[in-house]
Length: 453
Image (cartoon, rainbow, N blue to C red; front, side, top):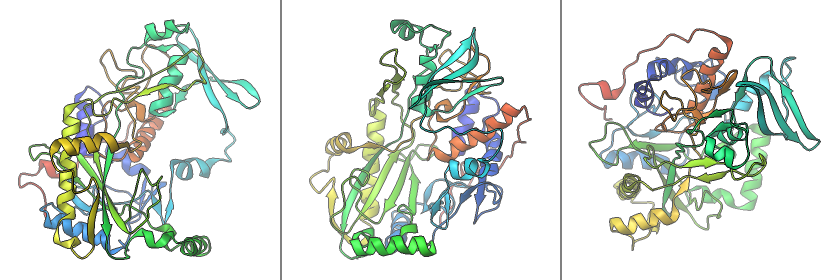
C-alpha cells in the first residue's frame, strides 16, 4: 500500500480527503484478506489477499540474515510498522492472482448496463464547449463513437491518460497548437510529473539445489503445470518474491526509501534471460525518486505511440539511494544465515566496490519496475490536472481515475493504491459521502520507536 506518510503528504498538498486516515477505509473495503482482520485489514472485500508458507529455505534465510544485519522484523508491511524485513502478502488466493479484472469486472459481466469492448483504442474525447460528451475509439471495423449522458471516466493509466487528454484538446496549449489540435483547455501539467520506481538487482550463485532453478527442467515444468491444472497446488502456485524489506538508505530519513524483493533464483533482465544455474537475487527499488519525466504526443495522430521520457537518475539523490541500496543488499547477503548457501557474487561482481563503480553498475543495469504515476496529478497548483474530486480542471463531466492522478509516488507497489483510488472515486461518481476516516497508530508516531523482533 505504501507508507501512511505518503497519503498524509497528499493531504498536506491541499488534497482534502486523501490523508492516510481518509484512504485506509477504502483500502480495507477493497481487501479480502485471508489472514488479517484488524484495524488495518478487512477479510470481506473482493480483492483476495493471502500470505505464503515460505516453502523455500532461502526465504527464511533472508529474514534471518536481515535480523543479523540489525534490521527490525515486520510481520505486516501494510499494518502498524512498514520498516523492516519480513514476509510479503500477495494479491491472490491459493496460488491464483486476483487482478482488478478478476475481482471487480468478471463478477458483473452480465449486467445489462455494462458493455465491455476489447480490441479498441480510444482516439479522443469530444467536447461541446468544455463539456465532455463523446468518446471516439477505433476497432478493427473502423472508428466508432460512444455518447455520454453522464460522466466520462478516463482510466488509461499514467501513459495513456495524458495521451488521450492531449489528443482531445486538454493539455499544454503550445504543444497542442503545434500539431493543429484545437485547445479545449490549456493544462500545462498534462503529461508532466512522470515518476516511476527504478529497480536494480544483486545476484549470487547458490551452492545447493534449493532454488527455483530446480523447477526449470522440462519434465518438472510439465509436472508442475499438470499438478496446478488438476489440484491447484504445487510449484506453479509459488510466489517468487515471498520475502523482502522496506529499509532506509540513510538513517536520518523518517520513512523507508528502499524496497527489497528477495528471489531464490537468478533473475536476469526481469527473467528475459533464462537462468543457467542455482542462484539468488536481491531486487532493490528506490521508492521516492526526485527525478521527474514526462509524456507527450509526437503528432496529431492519436494512434501514434507517445513520447515517454522518464528521466531516470537525473537527480543525484536517486543515484545515491540506489548505491546505498546495493551496499545494504550486499551486507544482508554476507550474514551468517547465508553461509551454507552463498556462492560467488555474479552481479555487480567482486570488482565493483567504490561508490563510483556501483553507480556505474546502476546506470547500466537499472530497470523500471512498472510503477509509472503522476502525469495527470491531483492538486491545487497551476500544474495540477485534476482536483481532489478527480475532475479535470477546466472541463465538465470528465474525471481521471488511475495512477496518473497520484501527485507523488508512494513508497510501495502501486496496484493496491490504484484500486483504492478507484474505490474512493466510485463513491464520488455516485454522489455518496466518503467513508468515515479511521485513525490508527503507526510506528513513526510512537515515542519508543520501531518494534524489533
